[in-house]
Length: 361
Image (cartoon, rainbow, N blue to C red):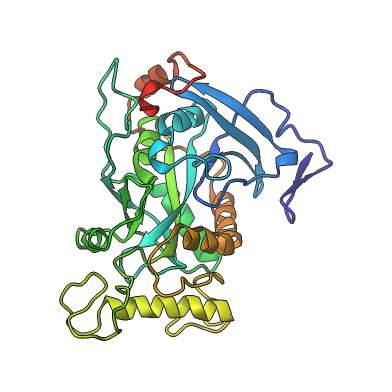
């Protein structure tokens, strides 16, 4: 079997791509909310990878001409909450099968007007606001200090930026994500605070996934899709647009404020629903929100809004992932952020099939 470059499906031709009974892949895609399948299930193999932290299912198949290990972060059908994801099992499993490069996809909220709904972001920094998540492999046997100044692999980010540019995508080539505990969304006060400390987008899963990958010397590039304007850019329910002293978070208003931004975002979604161009749209004839429908009265985030917009945007997200996969070199060498001997020691730990107790508490 080999890959048809047009259909991305396996066709009759000599190939040993999926015949190996041992799970091996150098590239992985971690699917975020809304992305639970990546390769044709009829032409792929799912392996149950035992790790020291429990068992993780990984599906190996072909996508965009590359052998890819796929792992849905939230499990099949979004069954695992962000604060309960077994991050260490997932990342250890990927490292154990030879993964060097990870493309992760995420749904995020935008907390600044420059990152509106419908935008793709190649994230470059994070701010951790989670709590209680096991976030290192080096909590026994040895202590290792990860250099996290540039947590997302610069070389992978460069390939992704080039790929999205070649696709003619509307995207931000950098962005800081604040990672919250979840599963609840932000309050209005939190959203405005996130913006004030330098965040552009908000998410529930980037940490500790990114640092765990770094601890095992795997490079990660993150492709985020902005589904909503979080809470801070949403108009206060019942507020009149332009009312003196009112903004999205109830702070003092000077000139054009966040209520106007929220109105513009909501107008964009309404325009997308009707097929018209949104006022101030960056692209004529193509809505940045990929045809997603608006929330009824405000653009405050709800789960139903997020998943509806992700469904509408999925072809665009998959095209972006395909472009990045095609752009990656055959022999990608990630940074060595940890002594390889220490990484080998972690990967040599005894495996177990059941989850560790700390994730059941």
